[in-house]
Length: 196
Image 1: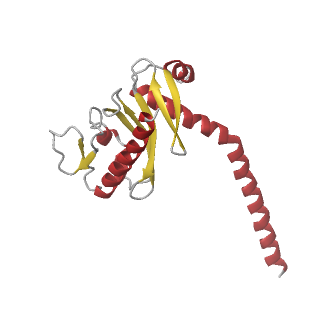
Image 2: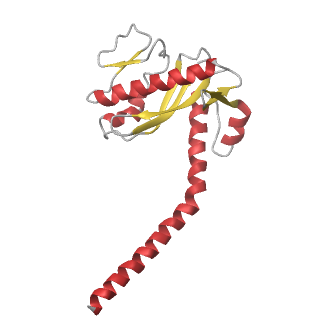
Image 3: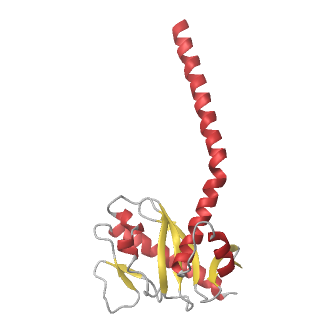
C-alpha cells in the first residue's frame, strides 16, 4: 500500500511540474507567436502587391505602403489591406474545408474581382491529397481568374472561362469546400466593400 501511495504522489508531482512548464512556455511564447502571425499576414500582402521588404523593415514598409481599412457592416467588422499606390485590396478568408478550417489571404486587383494571389495560411486537409490546397502547384492557377459571377473549381476546367480553375486531383471534397468558402467570403467582403 505504501508503495502504491508513493507512485501516486510521484505521478501527481510530475504532472504538476510538467503542467507548470507547459504553462510557462505558453506564457513566454504567446506574444512572439502573435508577432509572427502578424508578420506572416503582412508579408503575404506585400508579396501579392510586389512590394520589396526584408524582415527587419517589414512593419515600416507595410505601414508606409498599405492602408488597413476596417469597415463596419451588418454588425461585423471587415478588415481590408489596400495598397496606397495601386488600390489593390486584400482580405483574410476563413471557412471549413473537408476536414477542418482553412484560412488565408486573397488579394484582388483594383476592380475587386480579378485575383492577384491566393495564399492559404492554415489548413488541416489530408497530406498529399487535400493538403495540396496550400501548395503553389494548386494556387498558382488563381492569378488573373475572376471571382465573378462566382469562382468555379472543377475537375474539367474550361480554359475559356475567366472564373474557373482546375480542382485538386483526388481531392474533390476539399476542392469543393475551398471554392465554397472563397465564394462565401468574397460575397460578404464585397458587400462590405461596396457599403463604404
